[in-house]
Length: 52
Image (cartoon, rainbow, N blue to C red; front, top):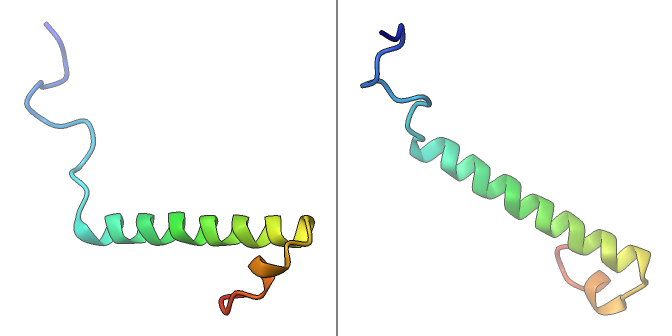
């Protein structure tokens, strides 16, 4: 016999708010990476984007 019940999930289901936060974090990291590449390699069209 096992001590843990099999009908309970291992992780709680993700709600809409945590999914939104994860999407925003991923978007932020992508924007940060593009800006870093623009600065390191002196790519002017990236640096001319209004977000930077």
